[in-house]
Image (cartoon, rainbow, N blue to C red; front, side, top):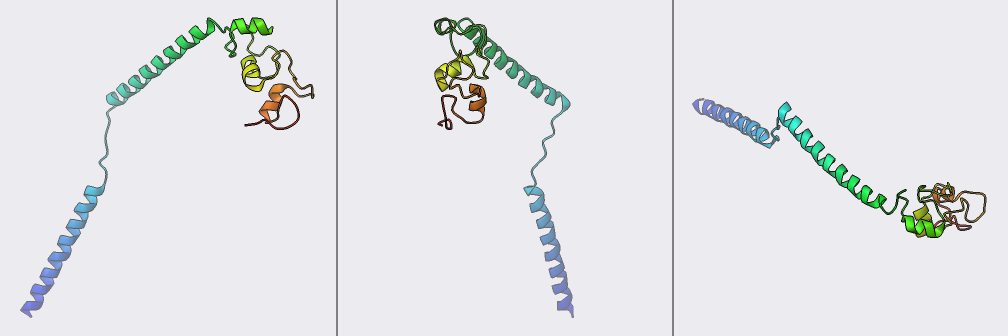
Length: 141
């Protein structure tokens, strides 16, 4: 009978030890939560805002430099617009929904005609729907 008591006690100790070990392992596996104070959160936000402000300032500088040669920012220099007869103060001279620079350099449409292929649909409308503004068919990708 004495042996049975010892065996029961040993089994109980092993079960208890196993449970404690299991709890310890699961506690270790859980990621530690990082607590950031309000002051730290504010400092992080201020740093992000500072970076954003620097990016915006750099973009403003690029735009200012670009506007020196392309007032309407349509992708054509003011000199090119004079040669083509487009308005250097309007990004879309013919009002078709495409920038003058895109018409000349990408779509090869006439920036002075809202409907280059004269099919009754403005160039921008056709491009927006995937059709060629130069004639029948889809835009080539």
